[in-house]
Length: 478
Image 1 (cartoon, rainbow, N blue to C red):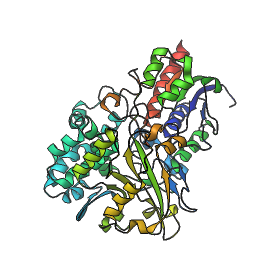
Image 2: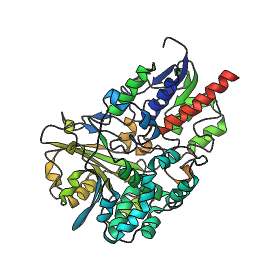
Image 3: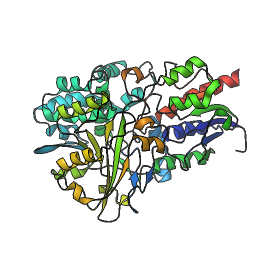
Image 4: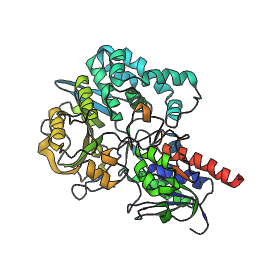
């Protein structure tokens, strides 16, 4: 730090680093402070089970890391950041019948849905053709649409509960189950308004750009972002936890990649009492219970085609998935939970020793749950992959408390940094507009507690940086 700082960013997750990069690209002096010993937030990789087995601790499959506006402009090749596309983005196995494959081709996917083939094409074709425009509109704050007719065509069905849209738009059990699994990434009841939006977006992105993994582990994403920031002149300090704004070096503006409760704690009297109270009213969603496995071989799926997908939705029928997510939303533990499983070593041989493999899976649980879901998750995998338990060489457990200890932004295991509900879809963390600003013009928020929320897309940081640039311009003019 050889010149006065323009901005300090607290937190080095993808959003914090994205905000810092956007500001540094404008020639501003930027410094990032990170509590952990390495950058990345929840986007890191580590040998969790056995030596030589590399696991993604948090974020892993990254459909938005090639499709969001921030990452489309990021020079990934310059830093050796490589994504790997599996032959099939996702597989959804069933009891006693062939799995449904979510393929890059809408037509190929529809062919596996029987009588729903035409309905599926009608549901996804227009959105997929306009994927970039739709993402640019919805990966951000509430604002006037640049393409009103397109937004209206997408927004009307997206605002429905996923369970209703599945029943209206699709008639067969296979198509409905496929859609329910994608909508369940919202980590909310599929009977809740706007839960359909996640299902549409996840399918749209799968067809338009795929659901890739990162070669060498998800931790390569923040490492590449940090390297680019340093090239731009930014600086990063790790291993330093911030208790208050007084712990930060002097700067014209501060951007916080923190959840609302920590913003309230760190900022204290720098924010007015009413705004602080609104931060504390922010609602967190359900948590996740995650298992990482070191495996002696590939998962023995009953339908071998599931080995062509990095991501497998383990949940069975539509009704079962809806019931599972409804249990969690009501504060219960689903006896047969919907499980999201990823098997990266099938497509990236750097993840495990030769002939052996890694996989991880999680299910949704009530926020802060302490119930051990190991047996329930492994029973679901065994159900569709008989013999799975026999190839487990080691396992590592991350319950909600362990996830929060790993990254303070994962409150109660909430990987979306806040409940994804209609009320918090665009108005997060409070009703203050724009949502990245606070009543203190020198304090902004760049975490996933702002729109568009969780996932590795960098757009919370990108939008916060735009607000910061306007605030700095006002300071200069004033």
